Image (cartoon, rainbow, N blue to C red; front, side, top):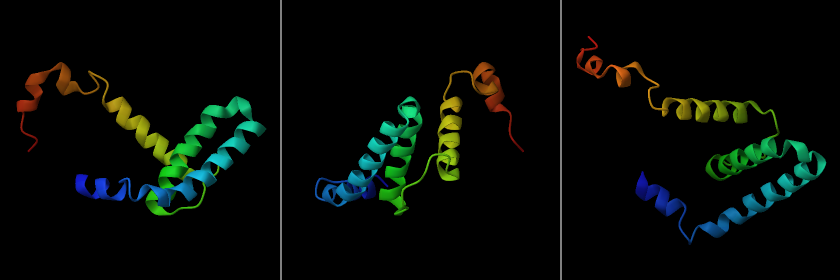
Length: 101
């Protein structure tokens, strides 16, 4: 997986992403000019849409798109799981020695 990522995002392949980046930056600028107070939402849409465009070839997503909501929900779940003490086994270490079945 590491080798695949290194090959897909190497210096030599970077120029083919310029078109995706240019489209997304233009849309980001338009969104920020039209609704500057929602800049945080615009940057979330920008980053998610850019990754989805490069990775899956999906067209530009709009604010409120279910894909953006799903991705952000997943990111928030992962972040919450990394908080120390998020799992009972961290507070009671002896639990990890109990077999699951």
